[in-house]
Length: 537
Image 1 (cartoon, one colour):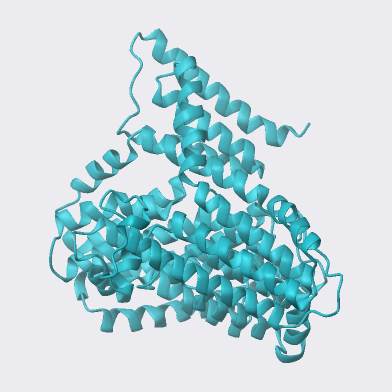
Image 2 (tube, helix red, strand yellow):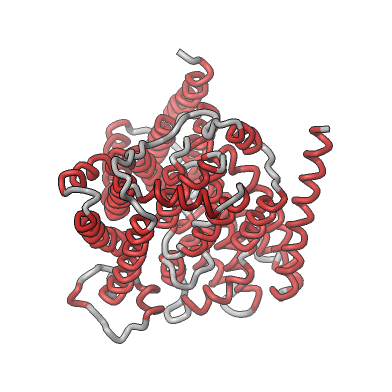
């Protein structure tokens, strides 16, 4: 038994029990709803995950803490709340995403079985000559797949793993590259599931317009791209990532934790690059069409019904109205059928072999599905405690600091997103508040963008974020390895972005502010590189 892992959990359990006894003894069980305590459950889960390196038990303890606080330590009500509001609603609310994950796992297994990934790896070995080239190629592919972050994470991971492995890029670094081009690119792409979600929280008819205006001020997303290109060309790594990259150069791609998920070994040499490219194109086309179709079929109550089909909606309006939890699994299933037929016609995968890939694809996605279920349950507990009311009250007390409000909103969004693990929930809380305080003017656009950037930043850092979980799954990397190696990089970009929002609050012109921030980002990386050289000298 490892006491280093058990002790923190014992301390948390004693704290919760002691807190409950103390409140009961006083005869007045205090309510955590709408107070700072509403953020306590995710803080417990994140803290334990980082200390113990165990995700499942840490998330479960966070859920239990949330249940106890929400029911004022009533054991029967706690069990009922955890079961219904927690796990049951988590599964029902994300069932569509679970289907999409399983479908992607099956497609990946099919491509590996057909030898498509191996063929692409052989092609890349001949045409991508350097480690930097492999990293840049991963970055470019991530930017091109901007429709949805889940789709981005798993697709880029499946395609690029053979390439990055050949050039000895650690799985932790691959997970970072995937994660850094998932949510950030979706947050600045007008046609994406994220743009659709953001527009849903804006005043009617202004969603896409406000989203587009906010893009140039989304410093975290834009500077993340500058960061990736810069560290790749500068050959710079620091923090825990440096150890992972050094080990990868010596042949150890994982450092610790090992591969998460198993690739199906190809049993044929008939695989060609087209056997990877064609399925990916089919999947993209099918998902884009399904998201577009679902957007035209969503009714006023946000319920999908083909009888509601409205052909008058434009492509952009349809995407603004779509629901990714419906469109993505629908598109994925259509693509899966087409891909199976394609491989059977090519005679590189038999029908029986294709059916055998179904359980293999599901098994590969089980860890990601479990973490996503528990993370969503934790978010439900946090929402039950009224964290949105607490944040609204906190924001209302800083109205006099207008010039500094973008920077303050950025920090608040980072904190909420990190604690809850959700970008969508964060900007769902903050956008209505921001637009109520600043309904018009450039400062309102800057504040909205700071909200979106902070939501992405916190999501990028959080170990309970669904995008972070998906990036680990896509790279088949140990999840906490990904979190610990990515954190210093994300914090670096966040610090520069924070300075950017202070400047933007005074300048209020992105054509001046954005170039300045890009230069500062490069300068910071140059200083880090010089510092690491001196430390190694």
